[in-house]
Image 1: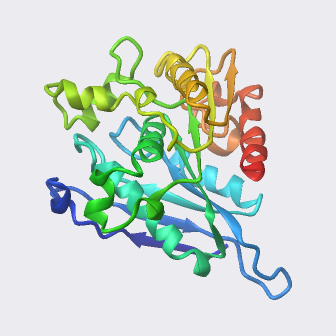
Image 2 (image 1 turned 45 degrees about the horizontal axis):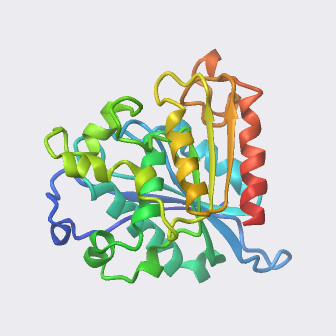
Image 3 (image 1 turned 135 degrees about the vertical axis):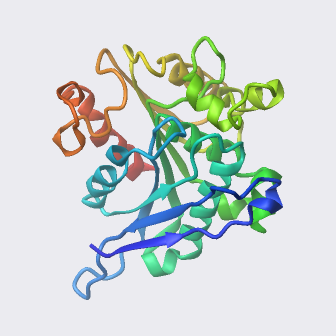
Length: 278
């Protein structure tokens, strides 16, 4: 398994952002090119770990990449800027990461039309943001690219923060993407992604646990409703219990016994099957 870590070079000031403390990198996990196997034109998975926009969770990074590698995906883990980094900081970094993957499709043996963005918890908010803002000037102009350069072909959202409604959101996540202060109601409303879904939103896979006490299941339910209303293909799985932050739901990413959830662990096979059909 070749491994490469790439520093993403981004002109934050061109987006009207303070570059102080901003740093984004992309960890690339790719399958070997061999004479026997030949080129495979693989699918790519851009992984956005969770962590409330406070940090990037290791449990939702490499363990996810390793699992999908075995199914012939090439995987890329985004280490994005965290803590009070106002929109579109992390979204710009995710867009730059997807642009890098698509620009290097030949080198990585990737089909440039089969790039899926996956996100967990706050990373789900980031993946959802890219999925709904890829055609916006806020992302394209600073990167000097066209919308098609940064368009995800699919979206995989895992117990995601998607709504900014105070009744249902994870407030710490939203405060960080607002820059640390809740003093811009228009930006807060913009970050409620169930209201950003439209015909431009890519096909989506969602999963959540009904008893999630950190990020209420309504985040996925509201988003699913919006997908349905806009006739966007989607698949959604709601598990009766399991809580939050489960990652693979098994020993490969477990830090305490409650994260071992055999029922919810089925999400990964379902997600892989969905992605292979996409």
